[in-house]
Image (cartoon, rainbow, N blue to C red; front, side, top):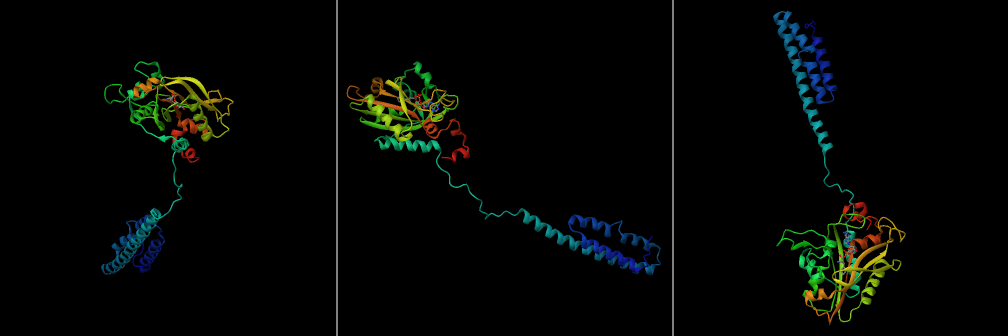
Length: 348
Ligand code: FA5
């Protein structure tokens, strides 16, 4: 049992206690110091227990000394706790501070998607040749998309353009257009010849995506109706377009084909720009890529819109805009056009 009659014991316990309080470097550490300095197992507590054996007068005076020493240490602990709490809070706030005025490096302004750029360029080429730009709806009637184009119900050619039907009107009457050719019909219904239009826009088909196909893609339709229009005008127009858009190094060819709304009909192909004609996955090993279809407007189409085919003749074509972009920029797989990958898009 320590000798509480010795004042220096109390003073020593207080001095030591104060030193430990001063040395504590966190609120957490201070809590441990508090238990050691003024707690039940502290040196002051054991001195307190020693008071019992003292004569009453001395017990009172020593007791007062102990109480005063404990009160000073407790006050010192409380003060340190408040100060430390403040500085710890300040440090936490500083570490969590958000500088809302900070200017982060920005990736720069965006730009139009490659397909949109290509559409604008194709429009420019044809406007430069004297065409105007027309538009039509993407949700089309069966009549505009098929029947007026000489594809009656049950016609086998319908399977070439298998598409998505909408729950709108009588069943099978409304669909997402499978090509831009219905715009030909709308234009011929709305204005008399001569007609020189191109109609770019989206088309939809139940095509499985692959290197050359997307289920949602873009076409640019062309229609010329005038007196004395011939197949030579069609092939001259396609030739002029190929040189203007792809440059003189790319060769094109027309191959006989079949479309119910043109007669005769042709397929328009250019050298594959991925393999330069050698044959690759993109062109299915042929060295040529089909960009579109074309032909002379079929008399049945003129009849559907009330144009006299004795007086007027015309040609039409429909090219894939995504395919044009693909061939112009050497894109091996068309699916990247839908990926929205900034590393691809930022190259154009
Ligand atoms: C047609 O769509 C005809 N309407 C074109 C036409 C117009 C012929 C006027 C005669 C007169 P076709 O199904 O072949 O034809 O498509 C034309 C072009 O659209 C293709 O050569 C190709 O470039 C593009 N195309 C067709 N399907 C897809 C697809 N799923 N994904 C991307 N491009 C496609």
